[in-house]
Amino acid sequence: MSAPLPAVVPAVRKASAAVIFLHGLGDTGHGWAEAFAGIRSAHIKYICPHAPVMPVTLNMNMAMPSWFDIIGLSLGSQEDETGIK
Image 1 (cartoon, rainbow, N blue to C red):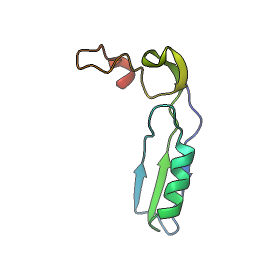
Image 2: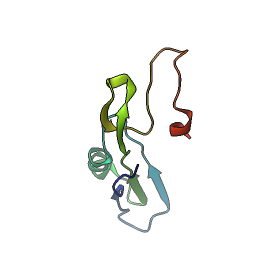
Image 3: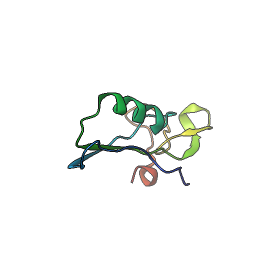
Image 4: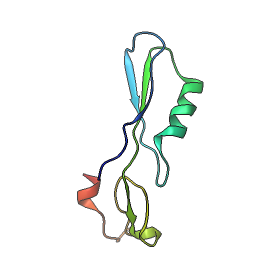
């Protein structure tokens, strides 16, 4: 599973810090990069990667951007340990 290159908001001045922001289920890094561009600090580079598109069990196996499979919401639900790692 591959994903496109991350959306990056470069620092205005020489970067002395970076924020790597992981979006939520079904989202992409593009909207977050736009949001960070509006509130950025001049010395910070913002990196917003995109999760690969994959079937998500909890959402009836619909393919969507997801960092790992979500099988259930209860405390005892099986977890996608491999995907999480």
